[in-house]
Image (cartoon, rainbow, N blue to C red):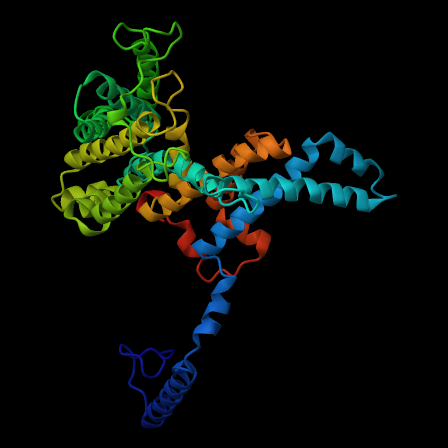
Length: 441
C-alpha cells in the first residue's frame, strides 16, 4: 500500500508523474546554469593587487613584523616611565604638553638610534674598523645562538622539547677548551679537533635524555633540566682542578686555549667577528637539507607529527628519538665551543656559556623552528645584544630592557590572535599561524 504523504520522485515512494519529472529537470538545469555563471573563473588579479590584498593579512611575515613594532612601542613606554626626568614632565602635561612629548621623543629616538648604531652601522664612524665594529659585534653574538637555536628547533621538529641546550653547550665548551689547551697539535688540525670535541661533548649530553626517552619513556624536559645543573656544577668543579686551572691565577679560571685552536677572525685582529658565523651558516644549510631532503629527516618529521603512525609505517621511533637528541646535542655543543674558541673568551670560567642555551629556545620560537628562520632570529637577537651595549653606554638605558624587548617579541609572535586583533588583520591566512610547533610553523 502506498504512502499518501510520499513525495514524487523519491526512490522508495510512488514514481513522479511526467509533468512533475519535467518541472524537476528544468529546475535542476536552471540551478546548474546559475551555479556555473556565479562560480566561473573571473579575470585573474594582477600581481600588485594580490600583494595589496595580502599585505594586511594575518600571514607569518606580517605578524612577525608587527610583533617587532609592538615590542618597540611597549619598550618605548617602559623607557619613558623608567626615566625620572622624562616622567616629571608628565606632571604638568595639561599646561605644557610639548615638554612631555619632546622629552619622550628625544629619549626614545636616541635610545633606538644607539641600538641601530651599535648593531648595524654608525654613520659617524671615523675609521674602517669603527664602521665595521657594529656588524662585527652582531655576528659575534649571533654565531652561538644559531647553533643553540637549531638544536632546540631540530628537537621540536622531532616532537621533543630540548630544554637542555644550556647543559649541552656547557659540555661542548668544556671539551673544546680541554682539547684547546691540553693537546699539542699543529694549527689546522688543532682547531678541527677542538671543534669536533665541542660537538662530541654536546652529543654525549644529548644522548643521555634521548636514550632515556626512547627506552623508558622518561620525559626529556625533566631529564634535560637536571642535566643542565649537572653540567654547570661539573664545569665549576673542573675549573679548579690541577692541570686545568691557570697556575698564575687564584680565582676560578682555566688555562687559556692555545692560539692554534682559536677560530680565525674575519675582519682582522681589531674586530671580534670570527669564522664561527661561517660554520653557523653551513650548519643551518645542513639542518635544512637534513629535514627537507633526507630520509632521516622525513622519519624525524613523521615521528614528530605522530609517533604511533610512524611506528605503524615501520619507522623505529626509539632510534629516531636517540638520533634527534644526539644531533641536537651536537649542535648545542658546537654553539658552546664558539664561546671559548672564538673571541668571547679564551679560557673556562663558571659563566663562560652565559645564557646561549636558554636564548636558543627563544630563537627557535621566533624562527618558527625552521632552520633559516632560526638563523634570522639569531641575527636579530645578536643585533639586540650588540646594540644594547651601546644603548646602555650612550643613552643610559638599562641593558635588561633589551631582554624585555626579546621577551616581548616572542610573546607577541606566540600570540598571533592578539596581534591580529590589535591591528585588525584580515583572517584569510590566519589558520596557518595556529599550527603546532612540533609540526613546524
